[in-house]
Length: 314
Image (cartoon, one colour):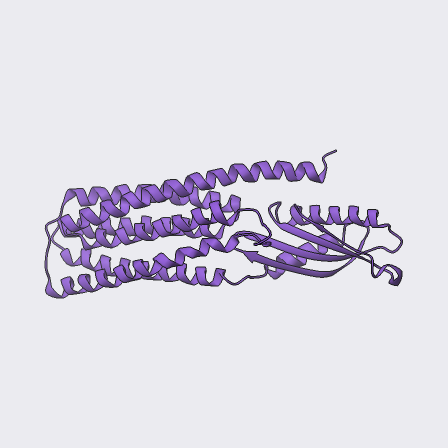
């Protein structure tokens, strides 16, 4: 018969494998995004493509997202200690410092593109700019698909945001393809117009990253539907007569649940401990094995009202 400890060990091995995959994805994303940001910026400047230059800001935004993911996976998942009893889940939100850089560059480039449109300046198209835009679109789409997969496995908000930014980079690169191709046929204003639209979207993405980071500094409860589902599952455990208290908090990608259950009158402390173990197993099956659960039990009758024990999930 499989015990709850064996289930936790198996889940732990699976989580460790997913974590390694997430770290590899973050490093690969950081390397590819950094290379593409430099390549698109250089080619955009040399070829005079404002759309490709604006697309480089998407890649710069991807770099910030990848740094947030690395902070989340390498630092935020450190185990809790005496100084940080609820873990280090908020460290991933320190990436907000770099968002201001993207916002400032976006404003400057947008002003430059608007001036170029007003002046009607034209730049000769370059085939290399088109090739770079196509290369960027393909690379970012592959990263986005892998990122969404890893984000689901690890339930990481930072990874999901990173994958969303990769997908936006894909779309921006395709927009650059349109702008460069239009310029090749003499419609230079399309390249500038695409650049302005891309810059506005970059500012939206960077602002969203900033907002999520600031919001992440404040703990949030789990969705009400999850708590209702967990409460219903806990009262089905033999020996549990009611759920007295249920609190939850999400800190970054970490989730904590505090439960106080009433056990049937007449049970010994040892029996109540075994009930608490079963309740912790139910928390893992309902919300995921990575959830940190703390279960307290209290006797159902007045004679056992002061008999309380706390069992913390390792």
